[in-house]
Length: 206
Image 1 (cartoon, rainbow, N blue to C red):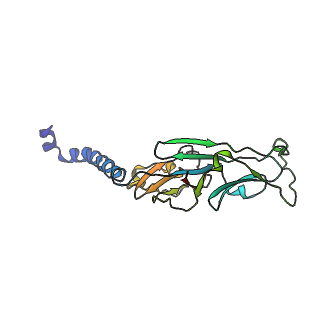
Image 2: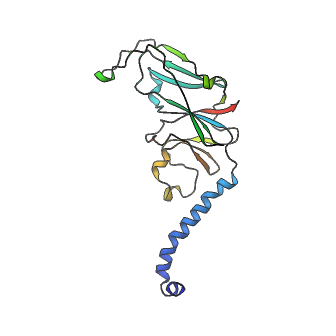
Image 3: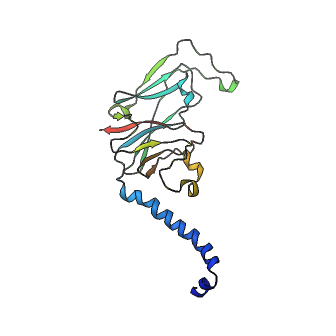
């Protein structure tokens, strides 16, 4: 082997450089996981939550004060319903929080190709969600421990050499990031068209 390297330095360099770069990348990308403290706060986020959900016939999820409120706007069944998740970064466990639609909604006529007529004054129905009732939630962009929620196709992953080694499709995933350390959030890998994952807030109590 030593004789081959001595006799063929160019070939050896060409074969060895990619291996050195990979080892260097793995070493550098692993440093934040060792130096940055783990995330401490559960995060609430919704999937299938497009910007057009501000219109009628949709669920709206928002933090008012320090409580999560869920309202249904309209009297017709939605074309798409958001799903709400609670993620525990300490254990990696994720739980879906059930969001029940109000009873008696009018069919949306999706099979006829014609949207249902919407009333001039939309009906707003508050939805009780037992799993959220006791939670105190902080909707600040930064968690108390300094982690930030990121999502969309901005390509930021919080890791070096992103453009060289990090597949572009993963830029659409939602993550918790802090000083280069990142935690990928489950059930967000279908968000290819941006903004279908919505941050709700950090669970600060109980």
